[in-house]
Length: 500
Image (cartoon, rainbow, N blue to C red; front, side):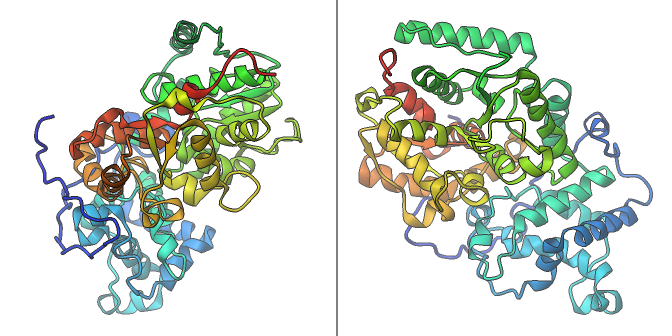
């Protein structure tokens, strides 16, 4: 590939984490495209900044800290201990001090102090309080779009301050005054209008699924189906729309279909609920999250399914696990024997455990796997009925499918996992420098197991992680096809046709 127009971080030893030398304002110019009126107004947001936006921003901040007590606590409780400073992948990759979680949160906190604390009102200069000005807003727009809301910093904060929640609040305030982000808001508009992030209409989706059925028939000799809008099916599968066309995502979708086929479970996709992703979380707007979630509820009712299973998508699983019941519940019309929602990895692991499907590891001969824990799965949700299931279940499925599996350095996996660098609504090309540099801690850990353990592939369980890695891996001299879907491995290993 052509040389990047920016420095690529040098990869070191994941066991050593020296605090980087600071490069003030190194990423001051990094920002996403501003949403146009055409992207803002369909979501109910102002099309642009208008007179009096400063007052409206402060009023919206006041409503958020009043409604969400956790946000106010995060504003008041930080003691600047420094525990979070070197935990953010964007700080480690860019060395910009404003990408330290504490410094990023202070961009928000300085305005909060000015308008909502006695000291900030009386002596703002003494307590670091700032007026809400255009310069401050521009700083917000740049640096709150350099946070992927991965929550790694919160794991190390002794007070549990969640910078992701602060970033979400900042983005919500910016949307409310006409300073939205194009990438997220354009995508949310497509979901409302068409049903998925890609803007893939129903006829094109159906044609795509028919093509995949033909591919699987050619590959296996077995008529594995990709049913859609089937009334009375037992399972509604809701999966990220990236699964319908991109690799390695689509290879995972084939794996889901083969699992359902082998288990003899009737299932269906939906043209109405053809998107598991919910970018309402990235912009911190619960009304948008609810509106997107309601498409799933409506599809489930119309099709009369008994259960809902989510495909491999990190933030979709976080929204589903943490918010689906409150946003779109109650789900009392579903079969009470099954959890709502359920993850495809829970479903497949249960079948493997009960010998409901058969796997032959030779289908993945020559592959040595490691796994990248999605930050939203690792720190925003769980799987199964035991603590830590979100870590053990994916590994159990992978280990049942491949000849050899090794984990990366313990400081980079499970609840300490690093973000891929493209999450939180940042998977857009104008942020490529940030994405490449933010991926460096994960690339460092990957290179370590490649060099020491002969790892050939890295499995991911998130659509954004897969898309990010296929783009980023070549910057670090890895093959873009090194990243695979977890269910791609299942697809390669599953034995079809003779399961009881």
